Length: 407
Image 1 (spheres, rainbow, N blue to C red):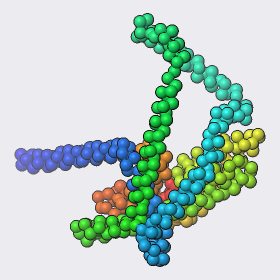
Image 2: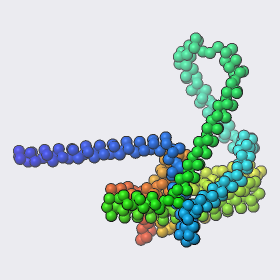
Image 3: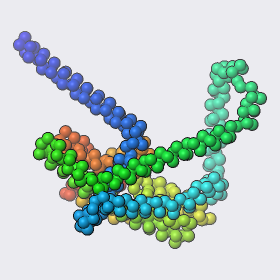
Image 4: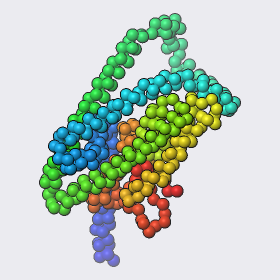
């Protein structure tokens, strides 16, 4: 028995030591994740141009191969031509829709009365809800009033005359100056980020192959070199193919939405087609937001409530045809992603980088899965992110681009 106890003590000690080491590893992993998330949010102005340039670089790879390898155009000239065409299209489209967009935004304050008129049938329930909220606020205010009065006291309250003088003499010029300064600072920062994006994209398109070659050369073993090449090729094939396919489908969705609005007589169909094109890049939430926006556009454009619902219904039909039929057929051979992690990635990157983060959520998740699948310690995480579709299984799968929920 004493010998058994002597052998059990080292085994127990080793088990405890292993558990403690594993706990430290998990704690360090959590702290590292939080540190990376904080850095991504704080340094967004520095990191975002790199990420956006990398995404544009993937989108333009087929055109670059056509110009540089097929037509024998030098890489710098091909990169410059692609950048000019891309941002010429973006700039022209932005200039075309900026004027009607500003007009609709200017009409927003008057839209409240118009909505009350269109939705007069809901006036009763809305009135009762507002009255309930006001009564609740009054009860809360009455419950907090004694403590508030005791805490402040009569000597801490501002004199009414002084308050009246402050209200009657607002520092209007100071407010206007501060707003103007903030606008100028924001414009300068945006122009600086745009210039950084253009420079990075130019060098990625013209010298990206050289960077990959140098990275392969510094890898210590042949297996590492092969792994880097495989990751780069898979990212280019899958993510670039996904982005090209989705962009093509989004153009068709925007065109169909714009034509539908034009046939219905809705003002500024180009604006709504562009909006449908952009919203379709955001998985799951983008189409829902589009339905709401098109419904309100119908309320502003038509007198009848039934006609006001037609633009939203048409947009819904277009999205169902594209999202549930055409796009899954085009991307049926590509790997899939977990829909829960797709929506989680969407919310995470929206919190970190706003709307741009929401647009980049699925490509970043796809790149992460590709990297995890090629590195042995990270393969369980890659399997968690999603796996290749099982052709023998009858269970519906979730497609990569828009995080389709199984039907």
